[in-house]
Image (tube, rainbow, N blue to C red; front, side, top):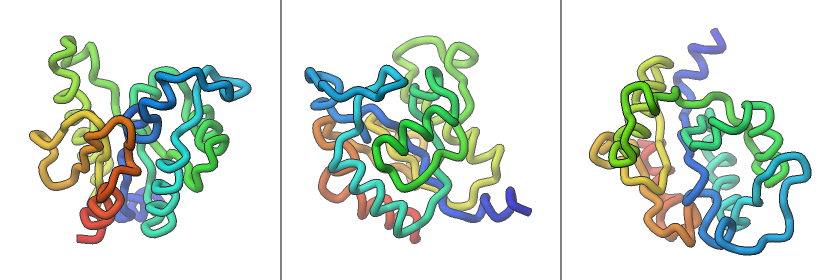
Length: 168
């Protein structure tokens, strides 16, 4: 029953680098690092926007980011809590890198295929994927592109695009 209810809830499929972690995080000499994990803090403006989206739509959060290769779900949720994100990650998208996709030129297609595979496997009815990679070619109706790596999800209009896709 829980799985059925989860499938009809909106899903936010989230990348981190370029979406929550902007250039000023990973190209600076940040002094504050997570005490247990070798990670830098998320951009505070991006955290604010993500929390506003979470508050409005209460989504199932799915991580599509490469961070899924380095941290368990529990560890990622600890990182989310440390960054003051008011939601927890429920799932990761499947890993198809090295299986079907092996070239860096296939990175965008790989990410999009992982997202679409997750949506298919879990029979997700309503979702939005947010990434700094341009996945529009593969996910034309449920994708928001964070084009500006200095702003991520806090970029003007990105929050509204996410909400418009979920609320359509």
